[in-house]
Image (cartoon, rainbow, N blue to C red; front, top):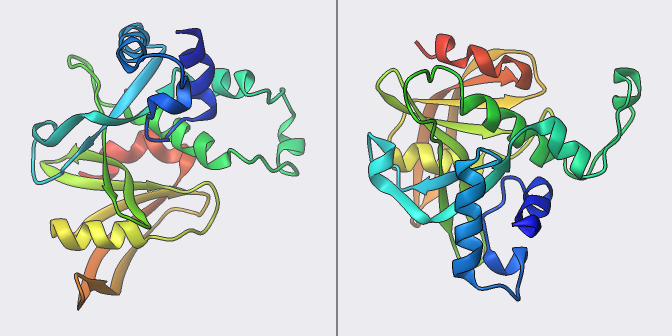
Length: 219
C-alpha cells in the first residue's frame, strides 16, 4: 500500500501496470491495495470505456484504468515540488507539467455537478503496435458524449481526438489548456483505415482554471 501511495503522484494519468508499481509483488495483492486506497478516496481510478454509446459505464473495462491522487497540492508535495511564489512559477519548467494539468482537471471533473451519485470518470484508449490513441477523459453531459483533451501548454497534437470524433460520429469536443477561451469550427482531413475522410466538429477550448464552468457551458 505504501508503494502505491508513493507511486501514484509521480504516475498520475498513466495506464496502471502492476509491474511498474512493484515487480516483486503479486498482482492480486496490488489490486487489493489499490481498491482500499480508492475506497478511502486517497486515489481514484479512471476506467477505459469503449464509448460505443451512452451510458459510458456499459462499456467500462475494469482491467484498464489510470490512477490519480487525492489532490494536486499533495501530489506536488510528494513529488518534491516546494512552495514557490507565483512570480517564480512562471520561470520554472517541470517535467511532469502534463501530469499536473491532467490531475487538476480530473479532481475537478470528478466532483462538479455530482451531489447524490458516486463520482466516476472514464477515458478511451486504443493501443496499437507502434502508437496509441487516447482521449484523456470522456464524460456524459446534456445527454451526449463529450471527449476532453488536456494540454499543459498552449499547443499540442489532437490526432487522437480527430480519430475519436470520426469513429464515434460526434460533433463537439473540449480542450483544456493555457489559451484564452474560444469556440472554433474544426475541419480536418483524416486517413482512417486506409481511406481519406473529413472530420468536422466544434472545439470548445478553455483555460484550465475554467473547469468548474464546464457543465454550464455544455448546456
